[in-house]
Length: 181
Image (tube, rainbow, N blue to C red; front, side):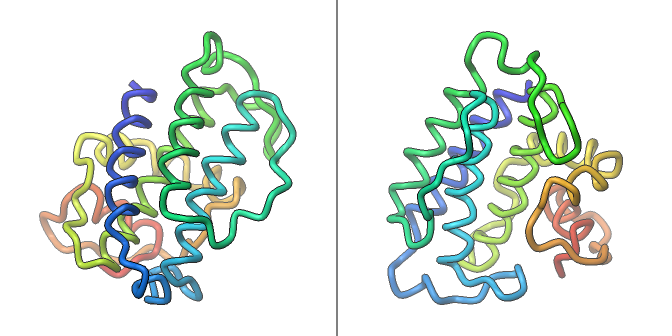
């Protein structure tokens, strides 16, 4: 299930990234202090860093800032390939919290890409209910995982905000992580 979720969210985020017009790169996002370019840089960095972690490689040394929009699709494909390798989800991976199963790390990446996809959709004026089924899975794990999410360095977290009654799962995820929905 987590690989299918990862595939879906990478595809949804890729479509959003490809829709970014160059003059929108300086637009502010729901992440305090981040513009669209910083968010794009972070998404590419997530793909590169977690792809390296699951492969057992050292983190990349390149500076992901100001990557072209095509960089997300390329690095997302590499990330999916790394997590799809035989045994990747079962093997232990060293993290700041100690060794975690690859499946837990994959879920963390899904959580990151889902919420930052919401950030990007919101900024670009696109529908925020990007991947409803995936968002439901994230919502189900988020309460339990929020301390892990924080320790793994999830960017742009704030105090939980209220979500409107009947809000979509992804809007509720965004509210839990401090976004105003």
